[in-house]
View 1 (cartoon, rainbow over the protein chains, first blue to last red):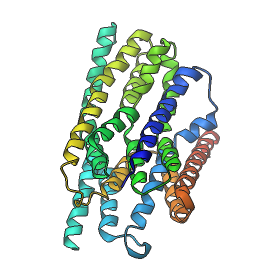
View 2: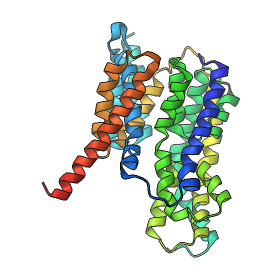
View 3: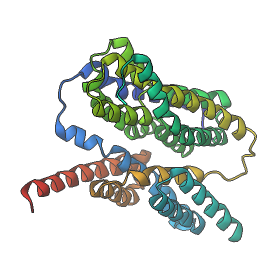
View 4: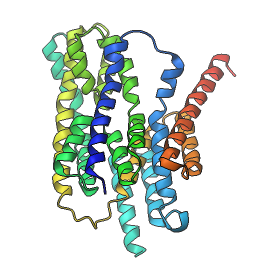
Length: 107
Length: 239
C-alpha cells in the first residue's frame, strides 16, 4: 500500500520535473542548437525504461523466481496483439482477457 | 486547406485533436481505476493527473510506489520515461519559440504526445502559418484532449473506489506497459534498446534500492543510440 507522505512527494516532484522537461527548451534554451548525441539518447529513454520496469515483474511473477504461466501468457498475448493490430486498447483488453481466463482455468 | 485566421486555426486544432478522445478516455479511466485500487483516494488520483499530465510516467510511478521502491528512484524512473517531453519541447522551439513567454509557459504544461504530434506535423506542412495561428492551433488540439484526461481520470477513480480490493488488478499495470511500449519499437535501434534493457534488467534485478531499473534503462538507451549511429554510418558509406 502506498503511504500518503511519499505519495505527495512523488506527485509534486513528478509534476515539477515533468514541467521543467517540457519548458526548458521551449522557454529557456530557445533556438540554440543541442548536441546531436544528447538528442539521440533522448529518443530511446522511454523504450529503454519501460521494458526494464516490466521484465522483472513478469519474469519473477511465480514461485521460486520463475514466471507464473497465466501472467507470462497474458504478457505475450498483449505484445502480439499490439504488434498485429497496432491498437493499444485492444491489446490491453486481449491481455486482461487472457489473464483472467487462464487464472480461472488454472484455478 | 491552408489556415488563414487565428479562429480557423483554433477550430482546425480541435478537429485534429478530437479523434484522440477514443484513446484518452479509456486510458485515463484505467489510470483512475488502478490508482484507487492501489490505495489512492479519488482526490489524490485526480491531483496526480492534473499535476503530472503524462500517462506513461503516471503508470510508472504508480507501479513503483506499489513495489515499495525508494522515492528517489520512483522520481528518477518516472522522469526518465518522460524525457521524450524534452525532445518534443526542443522540436517545437523553432516553430513557436518566438511566442510571448507566458504563452510558451502555458503551452509547456499542455505539451503531451497528442498536442506535439498534431502541431509538429501541421507546422511542418504549413510553414507560412503566423505565430498567432500556430499557438491557436496548439490550443485547439489541447481543448478536447487535456480536459478529458482529467474528467476520465475522475470517472475511473470513482469506479475504482467501488471495486473491491480482492479483485486482482495487480497485473493490469504490466499489461498496460507492454501495450504502451510495443508501438514504440518502430526501428531496429528501438528494438535493440528494448532488447538490451530486458536482458540487463534480469541480471540487475538483484541490485539494491531498485537501481537495476535505472542501470537497465541507461544500458538500453545507450544501446539504442549506438545502433542508430551505426545504421546512419552504414547508410552514408553505402555499405
